Image 1 (cartoon, rainbow, N blue to C red):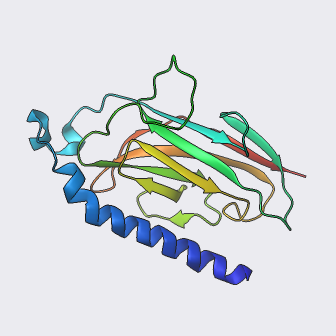
Image 2 (image 1 turned 45 degrees about the horizontal axis):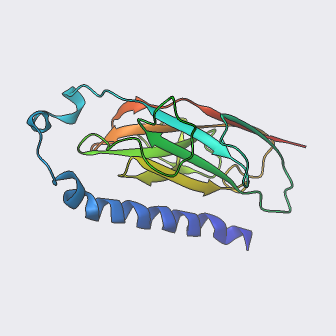
Length: 177
């Protein structure tokens, strides 16, 4: 059963990427702003991305330490929000504001382990993708290769060519004995 995990995960990520590509013209072309005629790489990107981790129904945190049981699935959440107000408590229920036009966000993991390798993110593997200002994924010990150690997560804002325009804070997950 373990040998089918990677193809299924890649198939899910492929379907997510295809659905993003098919809905992109509908979302990004909805409004033309004065600066949208400029290439995305030359536009100033003002804003920030907030990322947090959560285990079960616990609080959203920037550092999480979990006991790794290699025989049981240990699920946790990673959530990133574009322009989350710093004065508000993080909830991952709604977005702060809309993403800049013709951009998307990716949740990435380092070390890569079982995440999807991408040539435009050396050292980071993709575990989630969204064209909305809220990106949330449920991950487990299988994405980290069932290995002890420290894993980092970040969210990157990218243009349509995949170029990084902005990255979030890094959050830390530690698997221990």
